[in-house]
Structure formats: structure tokens, C-alpha cells
Amino acid sequence: MSFSSISLAIVMLSVVAGATWLTVTVRSWALRRNALVQPSERCSHSIPTPHGGGIAIAAISILLGILFSILDWVPDASMLAFIALGFVMLALGVWDDFGDVSAKFRLVLHFVVTVIGLWSVPKLPVLSVFGYTIDASSAFVLWPLLILAWVWLINLYNFMDGIDGLAAVQAIVLFGGMALNFWFMGEVRWSWMSAFMLATVLGFAILNWPPAKIFMGDGGSGFLGFVIGFLMLLSASQTNVSLWSWIILLTLFVADASVTLITRILTGQNPLQAHNLHAYQKLSRRCGRHLPVTLGYGAFMLFALVPLSMMANVFPHSGPILFMLVFLVSCGFMVHVGAGKLEPSGV
Image 1 (cartoon, rainbow, N blue to C red):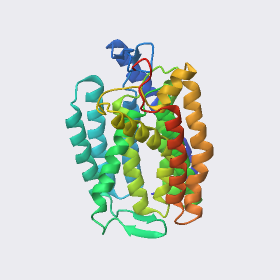
Image 2: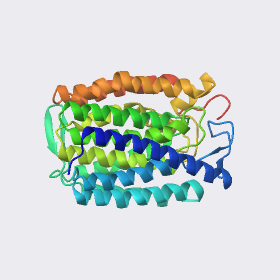
Image 3: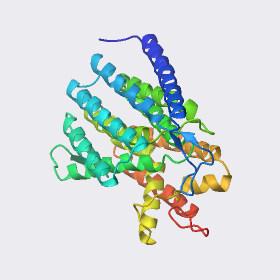
Image 4: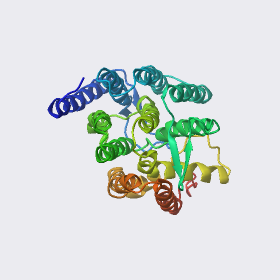
């Protein structure tokens, strides 16, 4: 079954409209129920704001999974796992947003979801590392590393959802950049899939743009971390697009979250305690608002990371080198900003 480009473009616009409408609906419900995030010393916001907007991203993404399966763009078994596990991640996120979920239970469920997700991918990626190739399907020792990396991605996306628009911009540039990569490499179906995912986040971002009218919440951030990991692995099994393209586009988030966590551990802080010491949070306080930081991160992703992600496909085996270079530069910037360090006020 195939659609014309015009039909797909119409569907894409419908996805944006649907995600926007659903975000507005969730916001209205949250306001009626007084489901608001209250300002606190650990929060980067100054006024009570409704949350749970990520429900729109998750719900529309699950519907897109059904569409991708109907169009026969992806294996049915993989999409069945995507839909089922997506519901689990959505339910867990909503429970965490509007209820009380223990950190241990949440982490255990993340591992269960990623193990099943890894099992549902038809063929695990062949990793290219400094000219050497490693088939993850046969190198079983890599499975735990892939699972740990996926769980880390789910959680770091949650960590990085702390100021208006930032997590949405990361997803928009990521899916937009991957749409370009897939198109460049002749993977038209995957290019459209990435564009549809971009449209889903864009519909939410309209209301999340600084100053945000609604927050993403765990129902969206954790779900996005899961979806990105799933699509990374699935695309690597179905296309010739480098897995490093995805990783490169995530560099800023990985660097900020990693430097912050390592610094807090080295300085004797409790890594499980809530905080506002990420580089992007410190920068937003210095700027006095969120917009410059969101735009700054987005501009670096767009003008530096997107071209580098495409170079990973133009020059075979260059992905690890390109990632390490930009990762080290990004980590240096995060250290310079003071990510993870306690501030004089004790915050």
C-alpha cells in the first residue's frame, strides 16, 4: 500500500493539527482539575502551570505506529511491540505525573520495556567503531550495553525536560535531521516516518514554546526517550543509515545529563535527589528566561549536529570519531557552565 507525496503531506499537517488539539484538550482538563506544577526551589518556573501535555505526543505517536504497520513500512511484530510498550510508557508517565510512582518501580519497568523492545527488533544493528564492525545480533555481550543505553536515554530525556521548549526542540531537530539523513540515503519511507514524528512533537511545541502554557511531563519525556531508542534500533535493522547519526543528534542532551550526573557523584551529592543543576538550567537563570537557552541549544543542534550527522553517512566509519569530537567539546562547555556543581546559594 502506498500514498502519494501529496497525501502524505496532508496526513502530516493533520498530525500537527491533531497533536495541537489534543494538547489544548489536556491543558483544559488539567486546569479544571487544578493539576498544576507549583514553583519550587528545584523548579525552573515561577508560575503554576498545567502539565501532562506529553500525552498528546504519546497518543498520536501510537496511532502513527498503527499507520506505519498498515502501510507496511515496518514489520508488524515490531509495530505491535511499539504500540503495546508505548501504552505502557504512556501509562507509567501519566501515573508519575498525576500520582506517585516509586523510582525503583519506574526503573524496573524501564528495563522490562527495553528488554522486550530489543527482542522485538528483527535484527540488531551492526556497529561500526573506528573501522571495525560488530554485529550486535551475534555479540550477545552487547545486549546489556544496548539495554543500559536505552534506559539511560529514557531517563536523561526526562532530566533534560526542565525549561520551556527544550525537550520539544531536541525532538523536532532530531526527527527533522533524521528525515534529511533518510532522504539523502534513499530511505524515503523512513524519511516520512521521521517527518510524521516531527509533526507530532510540533503540535505540542506550539503550546510549550516559552513562556509555556503546558509542560510535557513524564508522560511525554519518558515516552520520547523510549520512542527514539526504538526507532534508532529498528531503522538500523532496516536501512543503511548510520546509527551514529541518531547519536550525534543527541549529543547536547547526552553531554549535559552525563556531566551533571558525574559531577554530582564526584562532589558527594545524592544522585537520586531532585535538583536544578543542569547546564541548561544554570544558563536559563543567568539569562533570566528560557527562550535564549532553548534557541541556543536548538541552533547548535541544527547548524552543527545535523551536518555532522549527515557526514556520518557520507564518510563510512566516521560516526564514532565525529561523535567523540563534538561530545568532548560539548562536555567542555557543560563543565565551563558548572553543570552539576552546587551554587553559592546552596541550590
